Image (cartoon, rainbow, N blue to C red; front, top):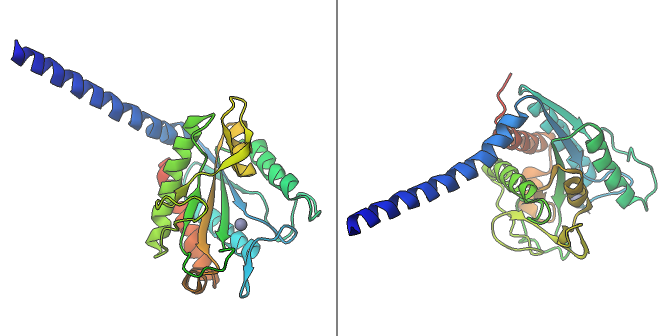
Length: 262
Ligand SMILES: [Zn+2]
C-alpha cells in the first residue's frame, strides 16, 4: 500500500513538474513562433537635440543613442522576417520642436510604434550618475513591471535578459542601479501616483506604460554610464564602440525571437 502511494505521489509530482516546464516553455516558444512570420521592431533612439539626454565630458547622449540605433537596425536587417523602424532618423525631434513637449514627444513615439503595428519597442539610452558618483557603471535594462498585463512583463524580462547577455559580453558590467538596486541589471520602476485600469501601480516610464496599455512590450536599454570614465572611454567614444553596442542589442533581440540570418 505504501509503495503504491509512493508511486502515485512520484507520478503526480512528475506531472506537476512537467506542467511547470511545459507552461514556462510555451510562453517562450509562443514568443518565438508567433512572431516568426514577420517581426516588427521599433528602435527608439532616446532623446533628440530638442529634448537632450545626458551630457558629460564631450559625450552627448542623444547623438550616441542615434548611432547605436542605426548600427542596431543595420545588424537586425541581416536577419529574415523582420521589419525595423526607428522613431527618429535625424538629430532633431520629429514630433514638434517645443522643448517643453517632452511627454508629448514620448507619447508620439509610442503612437508611431502603434501605427506600424510594432511587436516590440526597444528604447536605446545611456545613463549618468546625478551625483557624479564615478563608481556607478555598466548596463541595465528597464522592463515592464508585472502589473496589469503580466505576459508583457514575462516578454520584457526575457528580452531584457537576452540583450543584457550580449552587452556584458562586450565587457560591460551589470549596473546595480541605485534607484532600484537588485543586482540583476533587469529593473522595473513603479509610478508612486498613477495606476492601470485594474488599480495596480503603473510603470513609471511613459514609454513602457503607454506601450503596455497599447498591448506591446517596451524595454529601455541603458547601455553604459557616461559619468564612469571606463564606460565612457571604452564604450561611448567612437563609432566602432557604438557599433559594438548596436550589434549586441540586435543579437539579443534576434536570439530572443529566434530569428535566423538571411
Ligand atoms: Zn536617456
